[in-house]
Image (cartoon, rainbow, N blue to C red; front, side, top):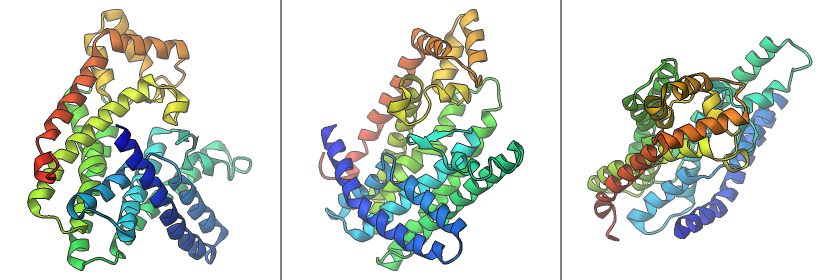
Length: 337
């Protein structure tokens, strides 16, 4: 675990100067257009300074597994993946109506401040959400632009960009599933697994590793193994993230504690707890999930029921299963067995 922490720490030290270089150019251009566009560029820049950045680190790692090293061009590629992640979060925050991300106001919440004393609430919110969606779109295009501009062999870039675009399209499918299945009273375990696979699994695990490896000229056997390894690790990560979202506090997760419950988020914790609870607890959970006014005491009761019904242990077992399955593909990725 310490090796992973050290790797992420070093990656953040390496990527910070690249972030500054890229966004200085963006802000310089935005300034020639309007104060509005400059403000937008600065908002995206500030958003990029937070987060765990594990997807970017996996991009570099995927390249290192093939070549044994990495350079500035690969750091730029990793930044493209992180910028893409940021765009997805900006959109997701609007859809989930989250007010806090990475310990700070979300992008649409920041834009709500612009005209809050000028227009009524409905008009102001529409403006803020429109600006957030547009800024997110900007990030989606910027990620692809950075990949296009890499000073690397054209055939490697073409392979990487094609894979990148196809997987981001699948992320949108995952988001559609999440939003629509969230309207159902009783999503199934299969629903949750499908959402996590397409919304998070590939995009958080296999995509960044494979982009790094493709840019290194990896053989297809290695790429196939990375795919199988990566989507399992990425999906396990999402199940673990759901656990953290329910049981950790605001200062630990960078968003309000219990927000997943208040927003009726699709998780295996919710599905299994409702499935296994007695009638009284089942009714309580159904009222608690989706209640924006959930109290701290009610949140604590949700947590207790989730543990007592075995839902938490079940979620952990899914994580372990995905991780164990992923290990069989490691020998096909690296000689370090």
